[in-house]
Image (cartoon, rainbow, N blue to C red; front, side, top):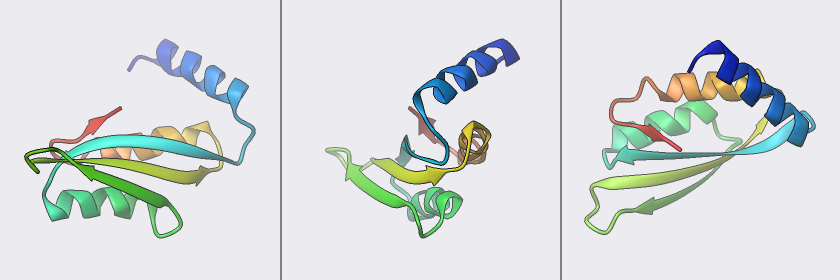
Length: 90
């Protein structure tokens, strides 16, 4: 994402959140235990995770509710998640 779009997103998130704030992340990963675990490791034990499996079990939808201190922390979490093979960030 280019810097102008990041700046606009940063401004929008700052407008609707007062930091620190709970933030919801959504991801879809191939249903391999190591990939699901990798997502969990990004957020740690204090986050709340909800998981749903696709009808055929090939994919896992992961919703994460985590306390974020600021917008930049959100961006950092998405950058870390992007390193997981096959992940889709929503």
